Amino acid sequence: MLSIIKKIIVKISDHIAFLRPLLLVPVWTPTLLGFWAGGGNSGIKGESQALLLATFLAAGIYGINQIYDAEGDKINGKNLPLALGFISPLMAWIITISSSVAALIVAVFFSLPVAILTIFGILLGISYSLPPIKFKDRGFYALTSNAIGHGAVMYLIGYLFALKSNHNLQWQWDVLLRTLPYAVAYASVYIFTTIPDEAGDKRVGKRTISVIYGARKGTVFGIIGVFLSGALGILCREPAIFLTAVISMPFYLFAVSQPKIEAKDILRANKVAVLSLAIFTIFYFPQFVLLVAAAIVFASIYNRTRLGVKYP
Image 1 (tube, rainbow, N blue to C red):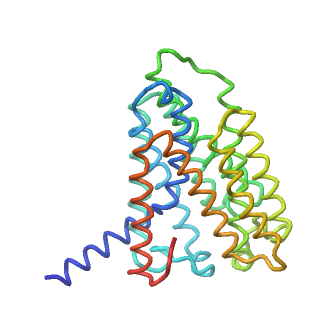
Image 2 (spheres, rainbow, N blue to C red):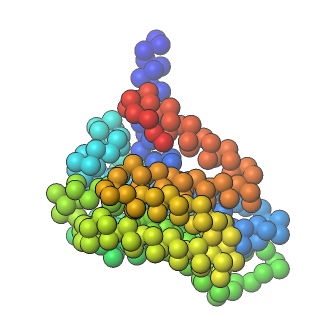
């Protein structure tokens, strides 16, 4: 009986891991910060619904990415359930399609602008992974997709969720400017994520920034992006992204100043950036600490017990 229960728990955990819980954190943060700008700072409620939509949307996009990147994930040694054979391709498709449909349902019942953004996000996610378009394998297309999708779209979704209940504020076009520091920041982190995978990406024919320009030049672009995101954070009155850039910059500089660029140094800098932004978001939404803690605890236990690795 205990062995059956254990197998069920393991199987459920594999399916949760497919949703990439830790990667949901950097999706939740711009959504909440956008919500704060749209009315959360004046007491408007509804951030839970915004987070629900963000979770469904991200889960669908992460799902299709894993489905079409399974071979590359195997080569790069990524401990992902689909690449490791822990869940079937059929189940991966079921989770992916269900998540995208759920995101659409939440969006359509909320408002037309949110529905339009959600559809755009889904289409961008499909274009990112689905052959023959596959933006993820095409340098600047991948860079732009991460900037717009992870940064700008999620911020705008959060903003629109708050704006609907905020009778003291109407749509302001300058909110598009406020998405810029997030777009630049997420583009920069994306560049750094491609560096550890450079060798494997070359073997499977990907043309990421680090493959095109090499790891050393790629880190230069990334450093410039981190600096710009911090500067734009000041100009656009987004202190969370500014402080995140300030805190993470020394870690990125250390990683790129070494004679040989080490994946572990890049990964540590990325973790610092993601965690810093999450911590600053918690200052705005204290209850958000529960979601962040749950994601970290699950990832830690799952990776240690299921995969035998220390992560995060």
